[in-house]
Amino acid sequence: MSYSLAQNRVEAGFELVEPTFTHKTNQDEVLLRSWRRSAPDAFAVTAEWPATHPFYRTHLGLHDPLLLGETVRQALPLLSHRAYRVPLGHQLLWKDFSWIVDPEAMHADGGPVELDLRISCHDVKYRRDRAAAISMTVDVERGGRPMATARSSFSIQDRAIYERLRGGYADAAAATARAVPLPPPAGVEAFGRDRFEDVVLAATDRPGRWQLRVDTTHPILFDHVVDHAPGMLLLEAARQAALAAAHPRRTTVTGMDSVFVKYAELDAPCWLETERSVDGDQVRVVARQHDREIFSSTVTLSAAPATASAPVTSAPVAV
Image 1 (tube, rainbow, N blue to C red):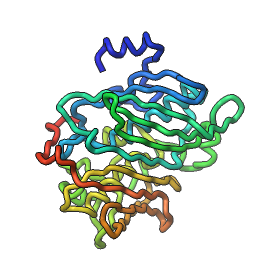
Image 2 (cartoon, rainbow, N blue to C red):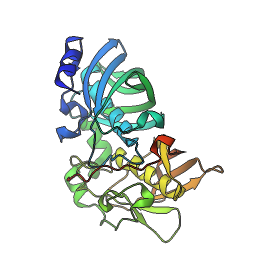
Image 3 (cartoon, one colour):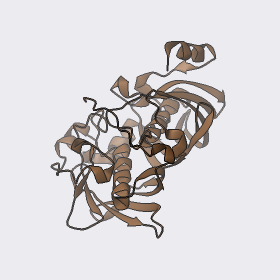
Image 4 (cartoon, one colour):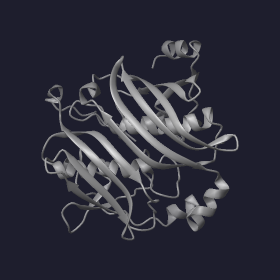
């Protein structure tokens, strides 16, 4: 977003987004630009996607749909801290996250993308004067055209309670040090990737079953030290597993309906299994650890739109 446009937003009652409120350490990864409250539980947020991104890369002429996921994810802490009095340091715990996107509106034209988000918060629960749980509905427009709708709910814990709940896993540095050895990536093309380091699945001896690759040094997925596998890593794993299930069909992800059941710990292998629908347009991905389900996602796939007939990928970007 240009400086003049951002300034106009501020003059129209928008506040600029401070990176710390998006829970990102690298300011270059902050996608939100400005926000304002339009009603007690309604908000307008602006965002900008870069023309190219080192991880969420343009593919089949389309922007990466997981950029939508990261954009909405950043809105969760932003509004929690700025609108609902949640102190920094409190933990946001994802319960569920679903979204659908119009692939025709995701076309990449070589430039950045400016987005408008209309966010409605509901089922807000409070602990004293701050929110303890929030559900959100997000409508996303690009250039005035509807592009996507997302829904998410999450709870919020103060640090002391979180540490009691997590016990010996609360120390992020210690948890990271106990991470399982990183297995080799399963491949590249079948997972919609062009770099091995961005593949988050490792092969197993069973078709449709993968081991989660938890690379705690990945500059995007592990922007800062955390005590468990981030939600965005699980979403990326579900996306890659679904694309692999559909390979060699040229498909793009146009929806995800995900549930976060338990923490994905760093010190034990996490296994993902896929099951395709009869028509092949949906893939259910289930992640298990210690034989218990910790995450699931139903991923919707669509054929790449006609405008994506000539595949386009981003130029390599150093990370």
